[in-house]
Image 1 (cartoon, rainbow, N blue to C red):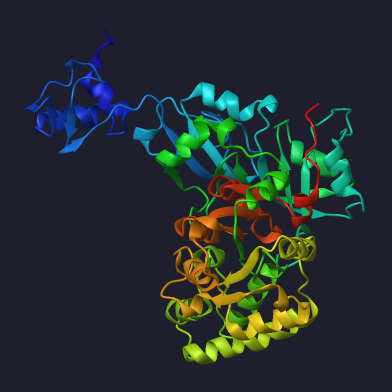
Image 2 (cartoon, helix red, strand yellow; image 1 turned 30 degrees about the horizontal axis):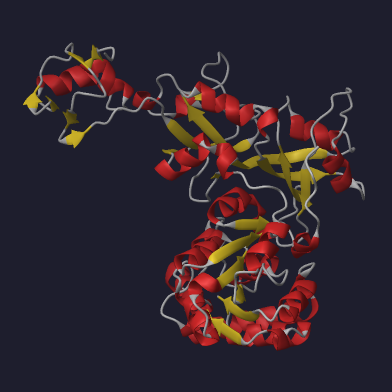
Length: 479
């Protein structure tokens, strides 16, 4: 028989208020147990058996609670501290009980922090043996050595002799502010004291700004401001508690090629998937808004992710009160981007080899992009890849842009192929959702611009590759 607990303790633990608030609620008749009003907060109940209602809402028993916080600077990752405010202090009183932060972020470090009362899960996430990725955005001053990526990939030895596990470094040279240093993303699988800062110090550099963007399957969204927090969704909890199941191998290239044997067509997104162009859109947005003396909001790219070219123009006009017409806005963007497409946007590594492979295998190819026709035509001609594709379509031709499935279903229909016989290649979550909603198999593609969303992309997609070159790499045996 399950152990009984007091009604006021149960409701307080479930976040319905302090003990005194619960007692006041009982006195006012706001609590029901098994269909009957209950005014005695001392009553003993069985949480998994008795049905409890608070203000008409059924209060379900939660053994464990999980909150995702965007930790601000100046707050310590602890349950109590004599000098500084703690992350637990930022929680509302009814949510503070028994919660603790999973791991630590330095006092001056911002970003994703998980708070829970699930000790076993905390161990799973923090143990280096579990190989849980933790990705940080940093701005680094100094000069990175030419082989910085290789040093970190091989596993570094810090200045005090401490050895750390191999890590992945991405240097973000395009589309990111560099006022305080070189922008980078670093993914590690452990959490030694000041580890990220010490890794760069070992290369003669200094971390000027540090923010954790993801941990395992959790990603910090732009809408969660520093100091804010929210409960995890049921899907996020499922992914966390089955973290080994949901983590994909580092190179799924051979698996993707095998899956292609059952496909009649491959449909590609364009920007960020086939071509290295996502970096330029933030640059254009900053410049365009600057013309109207409007500061660039950091949430913008997440808000417009997946929108068609026309939908994005409508969003800009309404959100920022742009005086130009929709057509004038689009014309200005085309003019601003044409030069970059002509001179600064290359094919991503391995793309042409993969396109040749698909043609040899007699697999049809299509493009389903959120971009406008003028820009699509420009990039196809400049990069000389139009000949590979039987169908090219933009989201402006269908009812709704990504994450709606419309544009992918349209391309499949034009190719004369059933959706379940199509594989999609996409670089952002909205696009991955679009392909999945269309009933297609989806392979996520790494891109520097959306690298901080890597965990989310890995969770959403059926497969994931860091580059098209991986499609032709041999699977390395374990050990």
